[in-house]
Amino acid sequence: MAKDGRRWILESARAMLPDIRDRTARAVGEVERFDAERAGLRAGEALAEVEERIQGEISRWAREMEALGVEVKGVWLIDFDTGSGCFCWRWPERDIEWFHGHEEGFGGRVRIQ
Image (cartoon, rainbow, N blue to C red):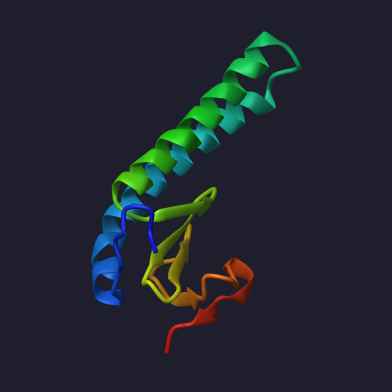
């Protein structure tokens, strides 16, 4: 079960997805911008600063996702815990179409029928 005790049904997870996609798109855009900036740098203080900004943006996104009641499983990867498993979504998927048991994780996800 989710850390906050919340259990999701597919309809409520899908209703939340537009907000999650918007927030994720914004974070992905920032990370891509920082990454482009990083590409022109060599090792040193400036590079470390850009890498810190990338990690900061990913951390901010993760906190936002957790505040929405979803579980962050990786960069741009979240689960909606149902109590018996999880609906699984990863950027840039358009919809929530996958489910996996608690033990299987991402590698064991199956398409929702």
